[in-house]
Structures are given as C-alpha cells and as structure tokens.
Image (cartoon, rainbow, N blue to C red; front, side, top):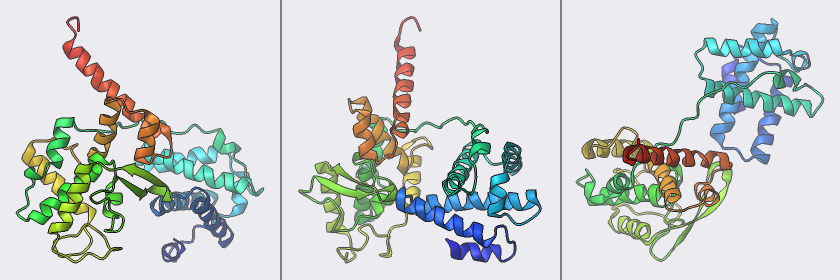
Length: 319
C-alpha cells in the first residue's frame, strides 16, 4: 500500500512522515486484529488520504498529527460538505466517515487525538438496498446446462458447475473461482471448507448435484489441472476471469428473458432467500453466507416480507 502512495504523493505531499507512520500502524492493526480484506484496507487508506488532502487545504499546511487534537465539529462538517461537492453518495460518505473515526479512535488510544468532534457529528443517512433474488423457477433455469449458449460441452459443464456453486452452496464468485482440484468438493465429498472475506473460514454442505456437476466438468476439461492450480479455466487455459462469468450470465438472461437483476451474485441472494422461505433460520444462513454481522443477513427477511405482502395484496379478496 505504501509503495503506491509514495508515487501519488510525489506531486502533492498531503501528510507528514509522522502522520503517515501512524496511518501505516493503524492499517496493520486492522489487518491483524479484524482480518480485513486487501480491498477494504485499500478503501480505508483512500478515505483517509482524502481527509488528509482536505486538512492540508483547510489548515493551510501539510496535515500532521498536531492537527488532530485541535479538530472541532465545524472542521468535520466542512470535510463532509467538501466531499458532497464531489458528488459522493451518502453510502460512500458514511463508509468514509467510519474509517476516519476508526483512525481517530486509534490515535485517541495513544493520547494523540479526541473522538469527541466526530461523536458530535451525525453519520449520513442512506437507504439500504435490498438483495434482488430470483424466483426458484428462474434460478433453476439459469443453472440448467440445457440453457447454455456455448457450443463447447466442457464450457457448458464449467459454467453450470460455477453457477451451481453460487446457487446451491451460496459462494461468492471469487470463492468459487478460488477452488482448486484439491479443494473442490467432488463426488462423495459432501462438504467444503471456504476461506471468505477477511480470511474467515466456514464449512459448507454440498449437494450431490453440485458434486456431480464438478466431476462432469473435470471429465471434459481439455487442460491438465494441477492439484493446487485454479480449477476453472478460460478457453485458452488460463484461470477463468470473473468478468467472463458475468458476461455469460448476461447473455443467458437475455436469451431466457430474465431481468437485469439476474446476475451471478443474485444467485447467492437467491440461495439465502429460498433457504429462508423454506424454513431456514437466520443464524444458520449467516454462517452459510459467511456474513460477519447478523444485521447483513437480516436484509433477506425484508425481501421475504416484501414478497409475502405482494402475494397477500394480490390474493386477498379485500385488497
């Protein structure tokens, strides 16, 4: 992370070495204690760099540790207003503020800042977008190999296996594409260990239909697959790019007349929603999805209630 920042700051210095050192220590603590992903750490770093850039202009001098004890609520509001002028969304601003608060709390624990000015500021409100699952019928259509648009049997088998991993196991695309012949749940293996976001591991059950699909793909794949190499390959033999999975689903939804919301990730949403509709409990679904917080999983109850109300209003004689 520091290497990229050094290039960026060559043209504009926005923080003193002492402040940069504390930023690095904070990021390393997040990585070690909360096991955040590289993408999340990079987002936090960018957010803090934006705050440093603002402070440099706002204070009239390069941002420094000495600025933090003197920050007032008015300074924080000015930063938020500045970000709004750059058309940042409420969701992104809320995430940005959460990262900056975390850094300030880190400084506060070392006697270098106070969280009071941040605590006096209300976090931006935003409407949480709900997952967009497919109906059971549409989800089954999407994973059915007979609906494949490929002329290559092995590609059809590959795509079906990947989509089944998303819908029948609840994996993220990145998790499915990280499988190797050694870690994939083949015939007779009814469970799989997945390392998800933040390095968190979870053990997931695997249906026979998924095991069979993976075994079928392996029997047709024209490339030699080393045990620790990526399981899913592109047409030239390299590791399959997630963008290709997205393009495949986009083509299939056009052919099947599915809505634009029919994406690979929608299959994971469908996995959770259909489990809930058929009696699954939230705690179990949280574990299967690998959500760190139950509140993230609770969004599926809102989807389920929304669909229930829709059915009720269409079916009830007094509606």
